[in-house]
Length: 144
Image: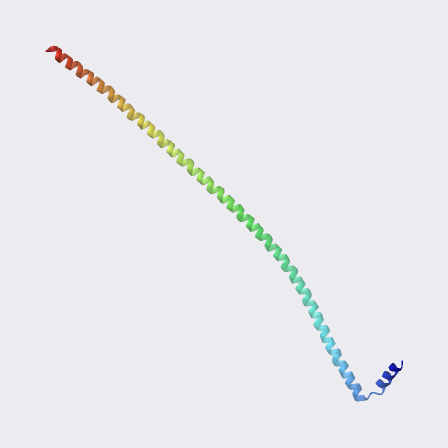
C-alpha cells in the first residue's frame, strides 16, 4: 500500500491551481458525459421509432401483398367470366345462324317442289296436247 499512500499524499500536496484545473476538467468531462447520455437516449428513441416503422412497413407490405393477390384473383375471375359470356354470345349467334339456314333450306326445298310440280303439270298438258294433235292428225288422214 505504499503506492496508494503516495497517491493520497500527492493529491493532498496538489496546488490550488492544479486543483481548479482538475475540477474544471472533471466538470467538462461530466458535461460531455451528460451530452453523450442525452444523445444516447435520443439514439435509443430513434432506434425504437425505426423498429416501429419497420414493423409498420412489414404490416403494410403484407397488406399490399394480400390486396395484390385479391386483385389477381378478381382479374382471373373476370377473365374467365368474360370468356364464358363471349362463348355464350358466340353460341347464341351460331344458333341464330343455324335457324336462318334451316329456314332458307326449307324454303329452297319448297320452291324445288313447286318447280317440280309445275314441270309435272306442264308434262301433263303437253301429253294431252300431243294426244289431241295425234287424234286430229289421225282423223285428217283417215278422212281423206
